[in-house]
Length: 203
Image 1: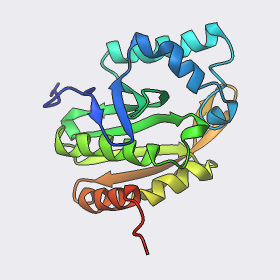
Image 2: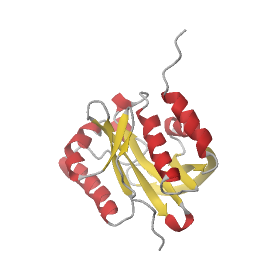
Image 3: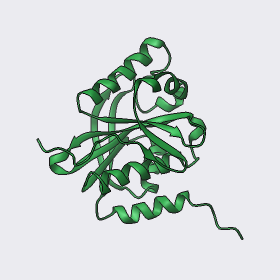
Image 4: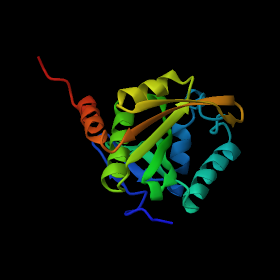
């Protein structure tokens, strides 16, 4: 099995957020960030409602990391150190130089602040420029217009809907909308993300 040319879970530093490899010390702070049911409407049943549910969610994430199946990050406010959410590399295919960015969520206070934009800029940049990916995939519940809009605005290409793609406990049958960014598209996507993070010009 081919290996990636670099580790999958580095620290990725940005001006707004820092992506840290998910670790045990993130458990309590991420539960606070996750304690808003609206985050989970399209993802899975609310995992932060009890100690047992949160520990099961967090332990599953750590288990997938330990098994080499995924590389997960905690999204941290670069200025304050506050935990804002999480994201992962998954569906790892080093032989095909491809992976997916998913399991992305942010606490509502971080919505529309540029945190997600910069997190995607950092993770896409590492995937293309360090790991040598030629394709990065993203997907979401087909009915999740907010997530689909975010993927479109970042410059990802909509590839279609996989009908009845998954059965999600507590949510039901899910159609999944698929998006991707290819290596030759990355420079334009990168410029667009950077422009969205730039302060508006003063009149």
